[in-house]
Length: 124
Image 1 (cartoon, rainbow, N blue to C red):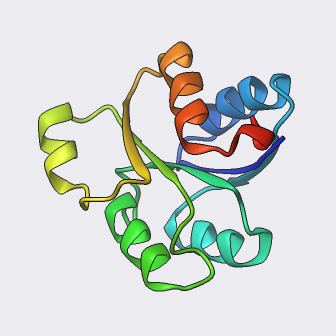
Image 2: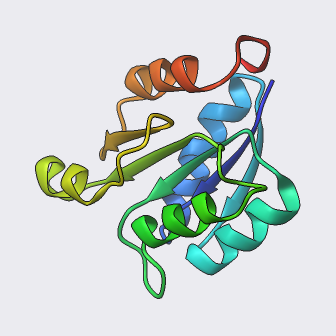
């Protein structure tokens, strides 16, 4: 199964996603904000990042830009999630074949479908 980095400034959201992903056999790493996410992505080398859009200091869009600029993390698939208006949020996302948008509250069936699309079959 895959190592997944979950990034959200809401610890309850990190915990809820962690429980869901752990039950599916994935390894989970949590980060509370953008700077912690960038550090964890460099050290942990996740197979996928689940990332909140609205966070203090460094928002999810900037995290994506920085990840994509680093050769070690440039191709890591990303699921950007937000409770913000879907149209507004998706307009802010960079054009990226390895990125998806997930609305909050989280639809876990939709999340599982995105994991199936973005993770290699062996990691699913």
